[in-house]
Length: 203
Image 1: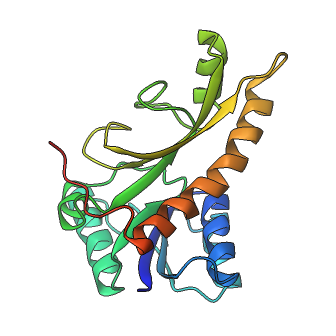
Image 2: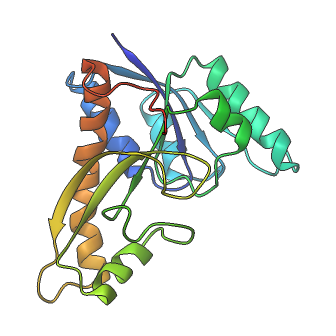
């Protein structure tokens, strides 16, 4: 089985790059069938072009109405034959049409141990600031299924990262990111191997 992946990304796409590296190394039986970004200048689209991957820029510039943009994203992913959707730093909420079309098959990675430090606004450096402000002894990375609420879908896998004395949000972010680059490809490999069955249905 070769898993057909659609990627949505807004910025650098380093998590996407980690997946590409695993595919090209032959350790992940998957194919990225589309890289879609809302940012025409994103590093993710540059990475897609570098690796010869199909890509598309879709944003409010093309479809000012959110429902129209949602429909266009859903159509692009379906036309590409995507089976699983991977969010790699995608800064927009997934619309209801795309959510319904790929229910239980849209994955996201969060730089904290959900359900802690998730929700609206918890992106970038903010979760790491929250971990340190809370005095937590550990943080980590969580791959979860996307639903209609920020960071509330079923958790598929987590990797833990100890908080070290003297950590800053930036130093913690750097260590968590290294684990993100491992865990995302691990989850996709588990899907290919049948260890994780998608779609994940919520109770």
